Image (cartoon, rainbow, N blue to C red):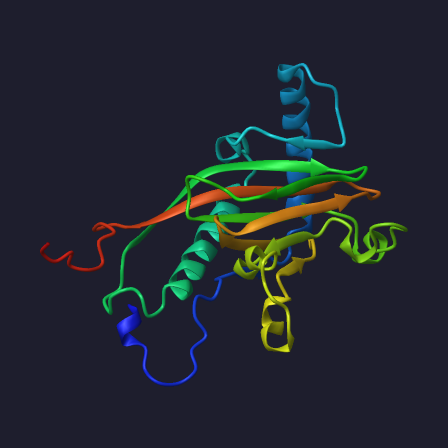
Length: 235
């Protein structure tokens, strides 16, 4: 698609694709997963000669480390949801014929946080899509009861493209659409969030009765026959 295709009328351009999915019936799987992740954490802290702290990020080789019976099915769920999100994000941009997509997980790791730990604003490189799966966190009632963090306790905050314009924007009633520069996603066990890797985000401070445990991953998606969509033309 190109600008020459725009005709008269109102257009809302360059939306940000974003997918939130729920995996039901995973309480037992998540509990087993937590125990496996705790063992990996202890092992890697020993290898790094670090003492346990309020924040921990594992190596990014989690795909090969977990041996649970349902792990393959869980990874398949992630791959399928990436596939769905990518297809919807590119509707109208891909050719009419269906593409045989190859989803490659470039790295997967887990993070544990408590005691006010947070992950500052960042993006992910060397991939096109990223995601977060919530393994464990306090139930909502307990989580938002925190006397300082309240409802923001342990949420993931995403900053949209308008965020970078706010520093120099002249603010009046006509650009109120710019003022909603971020959106928050609450942590819910079994919830998977998929987003473009260029989208700035952060995990806000978390303190709770249980650790906030998430699995993160990066992915790239290619067409089996190559990624070329259009003729390049002559120069």
